[in-house]
Length: 59
Image 1 (tube, rainbow, N blue to C red):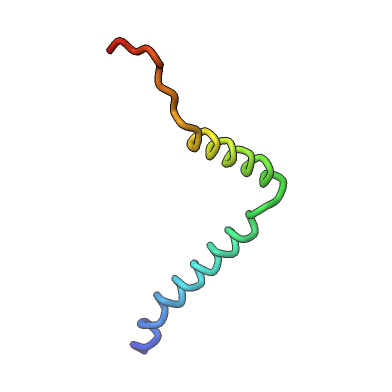
Image 2 (image 1 turned 90 degrees about the horizontal axis):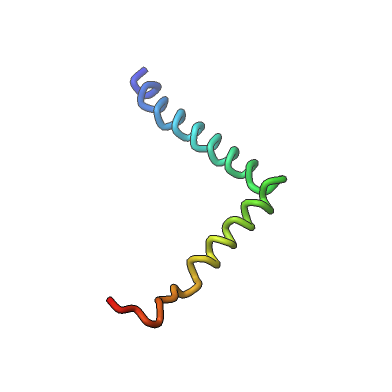
């Protein structure tokens, strides 16, 4: 019976991992995909634009 107790944790972890992957795959896309994509695009645009410094800083 030692082999059963040795195999249970990996089998449980594998089942949990498969469940997590299935949830991730199922939640991709859908109604919120466009809104999420727009938010990511806006954030990328903000991060890619160069920061402008004041031309006449007296510091």
